[in-house]
Amino acid sequence: MLYGTKIKISTLERWFNHSEVKKAWHINFDDYRFKINADINSFYIAYAHLLKLMINKNEGLGFIVNTRTIDSNLQKILNFLPKVKPLQESGTGKPTGDDTEKPISGDTEKPIGGDTEKPIGGDTGKPSGVDTGKPTDGDTKIDKQELIGDPNRKSLAYKKYIITTDNYRLHAIFQELKRLPTQSYPQLSAAGIRIFLELSINNYLSAKDLQSNVAQEKNKRFDDVTLTEKLKYLSKLNLDSKQASSTLKRLLNYTNDYSIHTLNKYIHENTTDKINREFLNNFWDILIPLFEVLVDMREEKKES
Image (cartoon, rainbow, N blue to C red; front, side):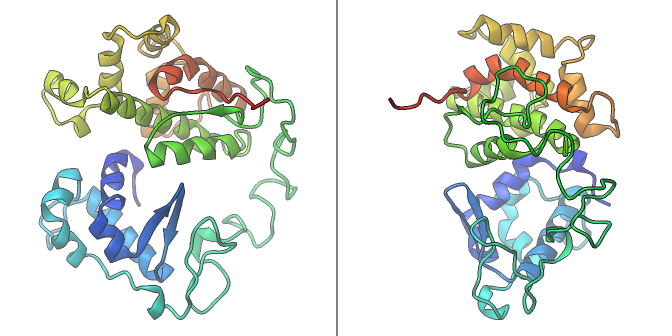
């Protein structure tokens, strides 16, 4: 079993953004789409082995895979992992990605594993534990007039909002949070809030050339600085927005339900407390003033 608490997003980012990995694994990014130009079965096998190496030290490899070892021992890691076969060896010339209707699995049109159109746990098109093929309460509605501050809206992120960043992953997650139904996927939505917050902070600190300052102050590598420590660092800066500063204080107040403690519980604990659409949507709204500073989140102006 893989535990997400031990897998760092920064390590995965370093891995998939490395030119040698893209070449060896036959992957590339097209705008905000992740394309796999390889035999999908061999890709999944190699990826599963990579995740294991990120969690436990393998005696054969001799070290845990992290951002540091990727930089210093990339070729050794690639040689140790199972080979990812190119499409030419898979029997199909069709790459996977958002521009295809179905992932490829070699000699069958059916996707493999968790990539089928049917949820795990049943052979029908119905989500497990639900008696209808439609998303749960409220998620079938089209937000023609999405109201700002509505706790019962379909998704966390407002469709009319945009952000400014050169970070591919940040953009991609933001677009997904616009589409992900909070009611049907509360666990993913909860984790999404924390992930988006940390990536936004990293984006801001990088843009302001402050990552080295943070690392020096905390006396550790930036990749090892916790989200709470980053929030505390930000709280000491003179941010342009008083609302953003107020949001930081609220996040760092553990007696407050809308705190970093709650966000950490979503990732690091097996908790179902405070995971419902209304609470999660309200949490997102509370963070918007901070996102306005971190990633220039704003309502997109329509051309007249």
